[in-house]
Length: 250
Image 1 (cartoon, rainbow, N blue to C red):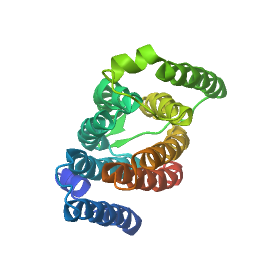
Image 2: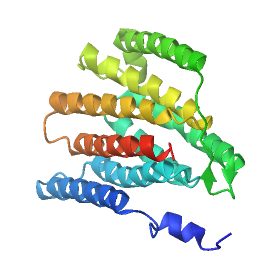
Image 3: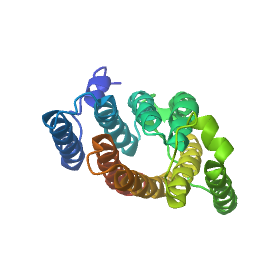
Image 4: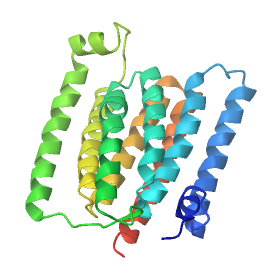
């Protein structure tokens, strides 16, 4: 085995043009948003700085995942810690549960499982989902989305999670938050199992994330730069997921 494999994976020397363009374009747009916030005198908003760093780690993680590289979960762990902080600061508690309570241990589990089922502990071997697994996953996802979105509208739930802070998000926003949480859990389980179909679920998650953070921008105003970075990150992830659909068929 080439002893320099880790350098090639972590420092992008073997990335193709599309992968480099995705990372560079994302960096330029999100860095511009960061500079804009500082220029408008709002540099004290810590969420934007955390979102920027987490976003870069996340894009690297997703692109490495499309290449079937086990190291994607190291970058992913850094990303979910940061995104959880942004969600907490934005009072999006479904995302907080997703990133801090679920994704942190999930990244470590996935790292173990992929290393166990990989070629020289570098690239994983994909598998294909069965029909009954699709049906069970779909029914369970719809049920849990309905349940969690209903819970988020309850006054008792909001008082507990938001520490009695008045929350005026729409019901649609709560549904999107629940959809992101539940579909991300489904996607993670598919990732553990190395299913090629995990990329289709990833696309659904990214669409819901784009809609969710766009709704938050509408609610908080266009100067919510951390939310804009979350939107840009989700768009880049969706493009990467589409790329992953084709790359995992090879």
